[in-house]
Length: 232
Ligand SMILES: CC(=O)N[C@H](C=O)[C@@H](O)[C@H](O)[C@H](O)COP(=O)(O)O
Image (cartoon, rainbow, N blue to C red; front, side, top):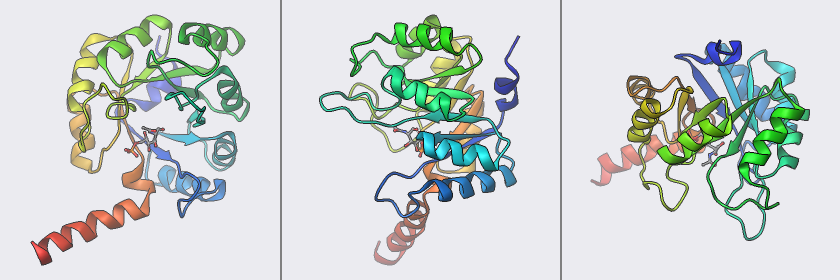
């Protein structure tokens, strides 16, 4: 039986409310306001970074939260919830789902992904795990490891996946045919038409960040189009 939270995502939009240090909207209070806006706009879930943002968002919305914790470790490329410590931090903050890098790259604490999943499942059986992947192979491996859902988050962000400005529709299509877990379309989705195309390609639901919660990115979309018109 499909978990009720996963079921509630079907065909819906999850808004990724994230701002890193140095960005104008950096701060948990701002992220909470974006989450309220997302709920008002009928989003079905929120994706959020850091225990502090997750807590602030859980206080103001009833929507399920996909939590992650971006943390960089010198010498390692994995940064989305890279070790069990971040998994625990995200769960303690109240996330309903924990998103983590599910590539096969080395992890800072040396713990294989398989062990991270086993330990998380054992200690927190009620928490769902989302695999952030960049290829079909990583998605197929994630299903075998016991993840509950898969997202195309990392396509374009590993050196061996296609580097494109567009969403990776091909990965969404191939992955949803290769696994029985729900596959979420995520990464560089910048229009309602692209969101619908993700569903057409087989996505269970769609995650959008920058196109909704990064006003500088949205502004640039307009200024660039206008500059192109004015200057050719
Ligand atoms: C690669 C990576 O670190 N992605 C992060 C994952 O949580 C976020 O920075 C993105 O905003 C999110 O995936 C949504 O994507 P987009 O903002 O393109 O709609």
